[in-house]
Image 1 (cartoon, rainbow, N blue to C red):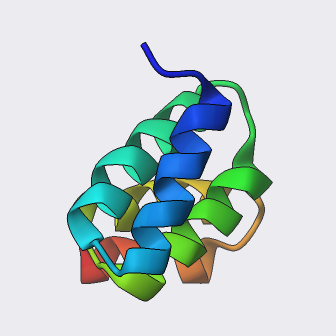
Image 2: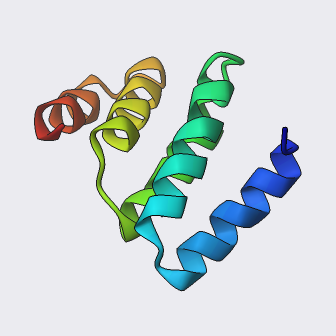
Image 3: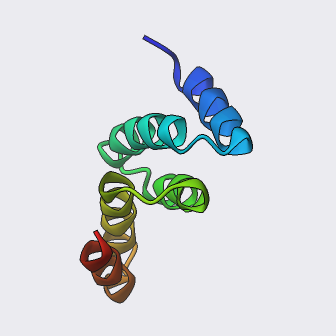
Length: 83
C-alpha cells in the first residue's frame, strides 16, 4: 500500500497532467482516510484542488462533509445537491 506522501505526489502529478481519473481515485482515497481522522481542513483543500480537474459525486460528497463539519451548512447543502 502506498504511503500518504506517495499518494499526495500521485495526486499532484495527476492534477498537473489534468488527469481527472487519477485525481478522482487518489483524491477520494485520501479524503476518506482524512475524514475518518478529523482532518477536515485538509479534505477541504484537497477536494478544492480536485474539483479544478474533475467533478465526481464522491469528491463533492467528501467536500460537503468537510464543509458541514467546518460550520458551513449552506455550502455543504449546495455540494450535496450538485452531487
